[in-house]
Length: 125
Image 1 (cartoon, rainbow, N blue to C red):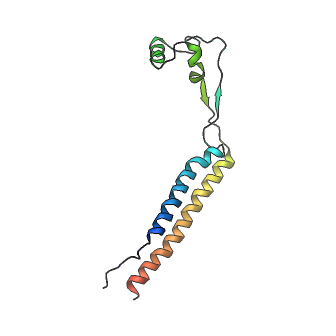
Image 2 (cartoon, rainbow, N blue to C red; image 1 turned 120 degrees about the vertical axis):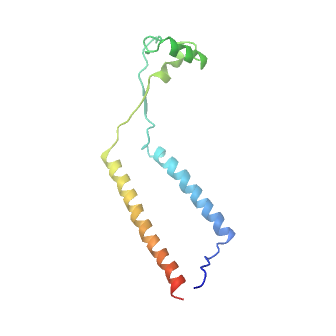
Image 3 (cartoon, rainbow, N blue to C red; image 1 turned 90 degrees about the vertical axis):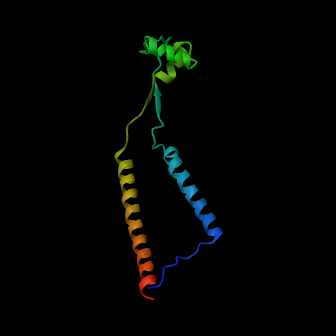
């Protein structure tokens, strides 16, 4: 049996592959943020004239806030009261499921074609 020798990819092909993968990785990270699908909606309910007690902070917490550079409760109130919006829509969930299942079937189809090419190259010649 002949030893299988895979085809050699050119340097420009490798560079294009790296650029495409980089664009895809950055896109996968930032597209959900641009489409407002990530947990980026933050709500603040800051009490008027906040104190450490009204913000629910004990003496140990106040000491740690002071170490972080927040000397008074008013300067840390926005951070302490920040709450993320954890709501989601069924439509977004269904679209995500459709994308993942579609990707799975596309990868199965491409893999089957490539496996058949390798097997025919290895054993049919």
